Length: 115
Length: 114
Image (cartoon, rainbow over all chains, first blue to last red; front, side, top):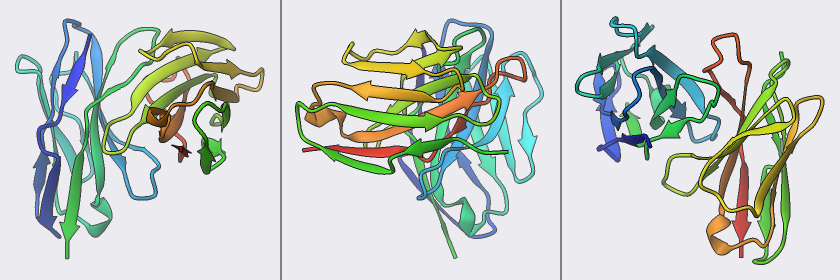
């Protein structure tokens, strides 16, 4: 079974600053995907960034980047130049490569961006 | 392109009743997954439907059941509701073969059981 742990229930950051959200996971699988999802107060879950485990290069999407440490089973999200619209719950999620598309989520980190 | 939609938005039921939640997948997506998100928790996988058949199930009792229709829309049915069933129910659709791993979520249905 896979587990995803987010050790920071809440974080806050000033607008325009950089913040890093932590995520660790546990699995015996070698082929998998990792994701960060954002859930704003409107509730709709939005994919922020994804990482294929076989890729050594860290994924980047505009202001969002990850630090993927496969040996340490760590997958942190860095948000640069934080904006008020980044305020949301952020969930780290894991999926084994294969036919079943089950996502395993962490408990989430509530990020508040202050003006 | 139409996104994932869910109905109703909110629902209040009494313990012991039955409920049906509905999901329309994103255009062309043939796979639908259902998740339960309790307050303050991450979503928990309930089950997934692919081409009208159940294709994987999480740790949920049989009173949680589902259907997928030929147009790929889906229903989640919960019988004998319990207080702990109160949660946000999320539907997600995906299309295997085009990355396959990206799931598009709907806005959810908030179920309250009293």
